[in-house]
Image 1: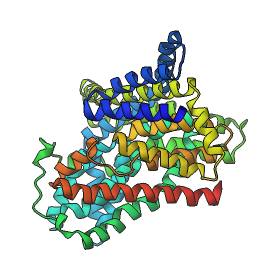
Image 2 (image 1 turned 120 degrees about the horizontal axis):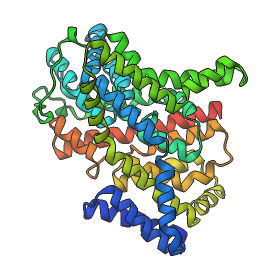
Image 3 (image 1 turned 30 degrees about the vertical axis):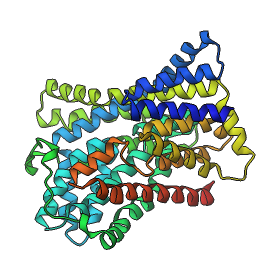
Image 4 (image 1 turned 45 degrees about the horizontal axis):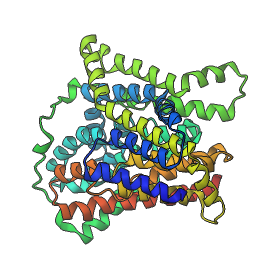
Length: 446
């Protein structure tokens, strides 16, 4: 019965989102109420459980998401993303152009969400492809793959940050191990996949692509944008602070005053706040921007993530209902009695939800809620690997029920069939490569 109730919940969620086109947040809350009733949670406790789930899930994550979004917007509006991309591409030249695109996309992808990063980087890639007389797809695949990897694996992106919180992992561990996992995953789903797709399906590699669908694009003059070094430093500041704090926690004593200060500065909330203040100076005030304009950019960025925050809160409500009803504990017990690897189990549950629901955030949040008890007695390293396994599953086989699929289709001028054969295949390869990388890493360090 417990598994049938979970299946019912997933089917209701799919029906509400896919068939009725109901708002994802509303769908999650409605489903949470229905499943709570099916699990026979006392009626008086259901609203409390849902409120607890939403509030407990958002908590300090709202700070990380909010500040992260503001930082990314400031880097984007100042032309920092443009400077990073054009400088790297000019330095690497035609032969190593894919490496340049990957590095630029990775740095920009740390600061911007997948969809926003796509809008920021694609026009630059389009110009470079035109100047080098290359198909847009040749540069677009490594760019989109890299942005997707950052979105799936690396804090402070919403899904990996939220999953880290649910599974009780350490954000610094997830970040450091996520970067290690990201490297082979990007190589396989970027240049390697690009090579084989070009051999097997050359018709998608066209040079006459029109990206007017992007709408009005803000033109930058390179000399008016921030310097390359300061742009990279600003975009990567949260990652640097959190990573340094994590490394110091291993090599320095907890009672060491220097380490205590570093841990304070590298705590996720403090790191995001300090990084945002740094961005306000480097991307704004230092460039003689008025504070009113800087604040306007920050307000715009928060509007863009408002629904994302609600969806994460809705995922927290669904998770709390599953916990209150004993589903999470049941699933944990079920998998503990089998020989299947926890990493594979986490990936499999998430991948099935992803294919069904479309949303990587909703699928990863739901899966994390189901398997959370499995990680209760795991080491910090293993918990971090479980986060990454869920992240890999959350990007599996992106298809017609996800907004990202349609963005790729329109931006690259592809037909529906071409998008399914190229982008859906790419995300499947990316997901499997990520799973393999996590599994190999677990054999080495876990």
